[in-house]
Structures are given as structure tokens and as C-alpha cells.
Amino acid sequence: MSDTSGTPPAVLPSRRTHRSARRLLAALFGTVTLAVAASLVATAPADATAPTPPSGWTQVFLDDFNGTAGTGVNTTNWQYDTGTSYPGGAANWGTGEVETMTSSTNNVALDGNGNLLITPRRDASGNWTSGRIETARTDFQPPAGGILRVQARIQMPNVTGTAAAGYWPAFWMLGAPYRGNYQNWPSVGELDIMENVQGLNTDWSTVHCGTNPGGPCNETTGIGGSTSCTGTTCQAGFHTYAMEWDRSTSPEQIRFYLDGVNFETVNSSQVDATTWANATNHGFFIILNVAMGGAFPAAYGGGPTSATDPGHPMTVDYVQVLSSSGSGSTTPPTGSRDAYSAIQAESYDSQSGTVAETTTDTGGGQDLGSLANGDWALYKGVDFGSTAATQFNARVASGAASGVSGLVEVRLDSPTATPIGSFSIANTGGWQTWRTVPANISSVTGTHDVYLTFTSGQSADFVNVNWFDFGH
Image 1 (cartoon, rainbow, N blue to C red):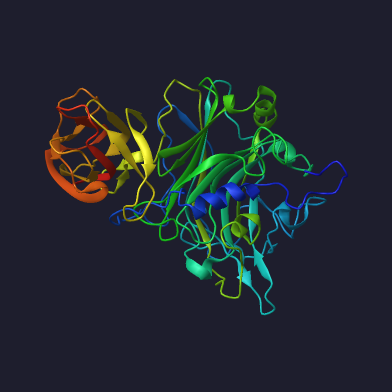
Image 2 (cartoon, helix red, strand yellow; image 1 turned 90 degrees about the horizontal axis):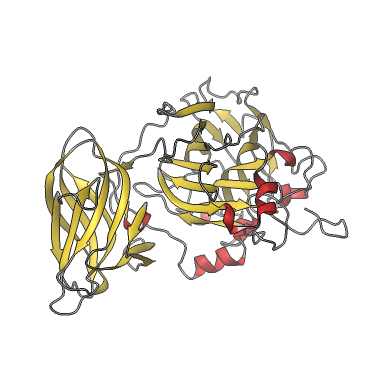
């Protein structure tokens, strides 16, 4: 965390300065996914209870943030970070953020309804305060040959546009050797489960490791990706943000999830063995905070400014850590896909013959393209509930040549099962000329793996799919 002269670099550790030029260019050229669901769905209540661990998983940590409104966090579980740096650490938390962190209930408090509020405030002189807490425990890591899952249900600060300039909420982890040293980042590892800036409907997740700048992990950018909240935006509703660190696979994996959908996976084989070992052969601690300003917001316009509206909290329903011995199943224990809200086509769990590409459809993001006879995509754990679904809807486009058409089919639990429904599609006017097509399906209840399969009498591509959902 310091250069060879002993002078700290201009921007140091933690979480986030990885939003640098690559992230900025992604935003400018529209490659960051900002997909918006076609319709809104109801979210679970703000004080939803953390899910019961399923078979094969053990709960190793939980804070449901139950308590009297206006009180602080449970200090058995959490400790406050205060001021503008760790003791002897880099100024402004190493990221250029401008707030002073406090332990005041004005910044960090329970709301009395089972939630934690971390609220940035600005005083009459323009000075910002906010909150940052981290777990007392530093031993979170998977067992040998097992899996660790760290998840939280969070509503990001509900503020957008110019009023959100400078906002930087985060849910992340740092390697245990960092505590008390504060000079060994990024070699000791950092796992950003959720970061957000400027009120954008985007969730960034990243692994940091190696050396800074550059190195095998491309610091300060790190290795990671981003996705968007669907149904409701990240700001307008609660969503579940999760990380699975899997030692039961080869190569070892760190997977990031939004609402149960795996959108980014980092493999140990992406860096050399020494770098991976230095970053992961130890425990981690968990951090929740809302920063104001710094390198990541600067990459998306900067702030805070005079237009920034203080007082919008990051609301945290629960933080939960689960552990599995690794039975070969890596299905996320929570966050099954809701059959009745938009399932983004590019969020498949596996596929054959498809290509994800940028779309110009409403909301942007990506669609699933190059779909032709014999191609398929799998979406695991789609929850249809106890009231039968009888309709399938898909957002599709086609620039197929005259005489080329095909079927978009829905199958359950096997790509060779009899389709429960389908519709035919031909040229819609272009590969980005979108329409929503409904189809009747056989009644479905319960939870199933859903396969979209594509059948045509011709070999040519015949359809793109942006999203799909089901109805009663």
C-alpha cells in the first residue's frame, strides 16, 4: 500500500478505486449492464427474517438487526470504524472519500423494524459524516473442500440523479491480515460483494489481490463485473447480494450473486498460485459502509456537490454467513428466481450455442443472440409458487431472412423434456426490433429448472431474447 519511497500512492486500498478508466469507459460506451425489468413486482417486507439454512448448510453468523429504534449496533458482532482512516493507515480511507465516519446513532442506528440504517449527513458548514462498521470476527472462510456463502438483504440509498452525486454504499470483505497492519493491501485480498455509486441501478462485485498498481489482478481495478437490479431498482427496493467462495471445485471459485443469479465468477486459475494463496489462505471480516466521494464516484461524474441530498440511508435487513462441507452441489441456498418477474435471458446458468450481446431495447443491458436450431439456455431454480402458472411471455426480436422462422420453447428440468409451451417467431423488422410475445403453457407449480430451447427447420439464426417471465 505504499510505493518504494515509503510515500503512500495517491489512491490506496480498499474496495474500489478499481472503478478507474476501464469502468468509466464502460459507462461511457454503454457496456455496463443497466437493464430495467419490464414490470415491477412486490418485494419482501423490509423486516424480512434471514432465511433458514437449507439442508447441507450451517449458519456461522447472523445479524437480523432487531432492536430498539435509535440504538446502535450489537458490539458483540460489530465494531465501529471512526474518523477518516485506520490508525496509521492511508488518509481518507485510502480512496479519496471525504466524509468522517462516526459511531453516532445519527449515522449508524437500528430503525426498530429489523433494519440497520447507515446514513450520510451534511452539516451547515458542508462537512459530511457517515458510518462504517466491520465484524469483530475475522475468521470467515470456507472449510477445506467446502463453500462459504456471505449474503445481505439491502436497499441502497433511495436517491438518484444529481441528488445522488458522491454516494458510495458498499458491502464487502477484507483479508484478516489487514486488521492492525493497514499497509498490506491488496495482497491480503478484498472481496467486494456489492458496491454502488451515484444512485445508478448497478451492482459491482470485484476481487482484489496481488500488487498495486497493476499486477496480476489489474489493480486498482481488480477482477470482477457488474449487473443491474430487476423488478425494482437497487435504490427503490430490497435485493439480496451474495458471494460464494467455493473450495470444492477445481479451480477454486469466488462467485457473485444478485437475487440468487450468478452474474460473475472469478477462478483461482485467473492469477498465479502465489497471488491466490496470499489473498485467500486466511479468514476475512465483513464491512458495511456508505462513503461520500472518492475515486469510484469520480469515475462516474464526481461529487458530492451542492446538489447532493444528504440523509438517504443504506438499509440493511440482515447479514448472514453460511458454510457447507461441499457435497458437490453449489446451488445457492436462497434467492430462487421468481417466475413472475423478468428473468434476463443473459443470466443463464449454462447454455449451448448462444451469445450475449448489447441490446438497444428499453433499459439497455444485454440480450441473448445468435439463437438457432438446437441451441438452449438453462435457468436454475425458477419458483412458480403454489398457484399454477399458465402463460409464458418473452421479449424477442428477429432479423431472420425471408422464409426463416422457428420456435421458442419452454421445457422443465431437462433440455429434452416435452415442451410445456412454445411460440413461433419470424422476422420482426430487425435483430433489435423488439416485441413481447405471449404463449399458453401447461400448468406449472413448484420450483423447476427452466430450459429455453430453440427449434427451426433451417440452420440460420432466427431470434434474439432479451427477457422472459411467466403469468397466471
